[in-house]
Image (cartoon, rainbow, N blue to C red; front, side):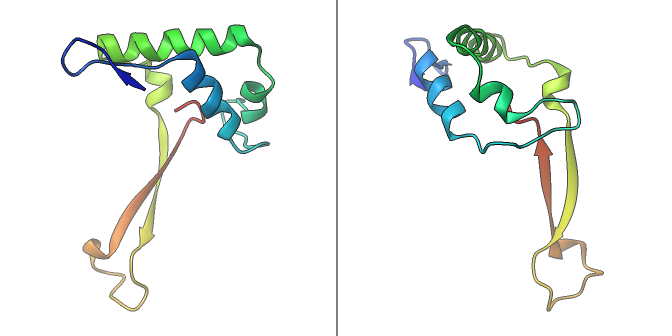
Length: 99
């Protein structure tokens, strides 16, 4: 990601998208039917579409509701401490593989 001349504005390059897609783990499936293999096997055109989508989200400060959905699960920080203490938990959110 590179910073633009406008203060606080960042842009993602097509190469950033391509590099990050290469880093995705294979065969990760989501409830909505998306699979990381869909992105890994995608064409250069898909990389450009994702590049445009993310730059628009960054420039306008909005994201589609479907990309903002995640499943939260509580995780115990320390099993030796009380499981009744809410401070002994942290949350793990699993979201879409495109984010």
